[in-house]
Image 1 (spheres, rainbow, N blue to C red):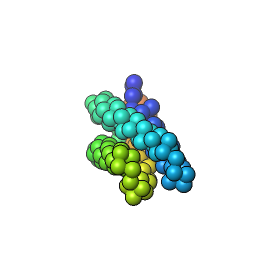
Image 2: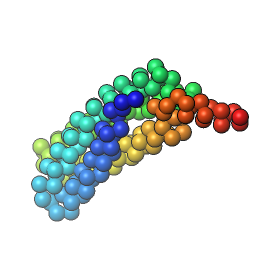
Image 3: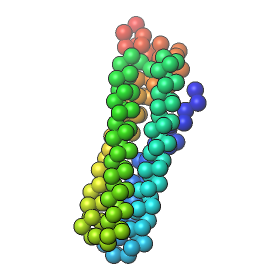
Length: 157
């Protein structure tokens, strides 16, 4: 199965961490270059998040159509999809506030940006944990023969 989703999600998780470092450096030093960098990093994370959601929808369709997931994983897959949109919304709000903070030269909004970046990181990490459980706990996208073996193990056969 050709999966597109995993390469994109790693960027959605890692980029806000880089933005947090840049934003904290800006607050500590007052050098606007770091604030600009944080904005650009968050904007790139937002852009990549659209690709992550779109590729996730495509990959989930392949998984469900091919019955390549344990039955209990279907609910988790739906929750993962829904929360993916929440993560995009958080990244959008964070990027927007960061842009306004930079445009208005507002230290208060810059500090609020730190909290929003941390929220973005927490949401992305939670989403990543859920996505990982789809693979490792519910065999999402794994070959059918492996799934049948797992089903037999769960039944105690």
